[in-house]
Image (cartoon, rainbow, N blue to C red; front, side, top):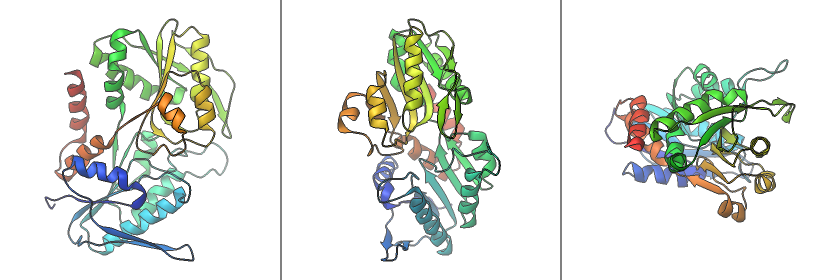
Length: 335
């Protein structure tokens, strides 16, 4: 393995990539992306990558003018070109991994898109993928045959909420049963960091064809408590709004929401503006282009996750443990 990190960021993730490069005390490697009149495109490195270990940053979210499929296709072609140019290894850095929510068959003949995306990435020669807080960690790990590395944002959120926990009684709530493990891990880290008892609860709900219905009963005591609802991503904000309303109806003092990925839809502005939430805390895995300036100023807090990715890239490149990175960060927060 070469000592110097060869780091690329495709155009739509350039801002994220530049922040990672600064953390690594390096610069982004040069590349070219060209669009043709018929809608086709090409991308290639402008630097020699022969026998080099290469890292490519591309956050796979959709935005106006660039669909998630466009970004995935560009990434696949670029990885293929790097392998054809004799790169020793290529690691995809995907701050947000597309199609990860469809990880199992819930109806007859359903696609399992997380597995298909893995097959595509492996087909072009990907040696490793690194992402953060996927919807279903077990499904992600089972989908890939190449190395699949996974980061967590919980310690960043612990650092943000620790001062609040030291002043108030707090309950961590999962908006559904599926996210209970994520919420419990966050609760434990928050409690260990602050040396204060932090409660736990979850909300029962049903979802079919994208529509949430049925019970919104809270399991856990939120009376006179400050509630932190944690999820992996926020889309329209409907789930968080329902959960916050249910918490306040049960006697909660106030409610915060936190998620790693702000995959906001066009409806999110209205829903989150009207939602009874003190704050919505996310990271910058996806830019907040869908949100209004007013909402960003009044309610949304964006935490910078790039130092976490930079530290992980550095550790991968030098053959060090990512688990040690996670534990070290938690100890630093406690200290």
